[in-house]
Length: 323
Image (cartoon, rainbow, N blue to C red; front, side, top):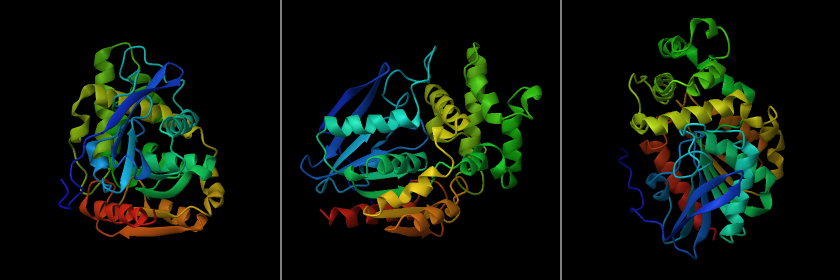
């Protein structure tokens, strides 16, 4: 729990399910002032879903805050934990299209984007495709969708700092597959016909996700993974995206950041963020003309730590003043 004072709890004043095609319906909600400055939250994972914590990063008297659960997770349907789940229509391009449909449904002209971890990659991809509809951007735990970033976190790069935890992850796949791509191996296990195999694979994958956000590493599942359905959907969606490198051309989002020359952005990163090292945010700050980089010296990847939360609150307050 953070010791920083968030804005008071607020409940949605509107919510619904938006049909985005391909058999998918995404859950959305709005809270705060219906006439306030529009802002949309892009959650991480992919596959995490939005939470009440995200709502409390914004002054409810100043913002009209939009939250939604991306395809396959949270309250969106069909859920990726379901038997027979098909993730073929769950790609970065689909998510960008969903954000646009939601913007049009809510009759928003321009909105602030707030995204963390995977959400920062998605925000960057959306902003570059629809810069005319973006007023400002706040990114934290910054990722940019490069192949090297996926390899660092999911293909053994981070093992230099977490060797025991990486070895535990590799031990969860059949011996014959341990020298192949661990991501592919887990993706197969997560769709195995045996429910026990699926549950074990989801737990092993989520143990790796739980170990690496901070130091010292944890040897227990993070609280959010206590629900087996949440853990399975999360692991399935993450491995689906990683094995395809999020369907992004390597380095394209950095290369095209110049398209956002007129969009202010605040980049917030913990100095000890092992999942999203500050080099990601540094590279993006060099490529984005109006970027401001804020490094939180005592923080890791955890989004709700005091230092990162403090800077997120400062950022939303600053941009609220821009009207």
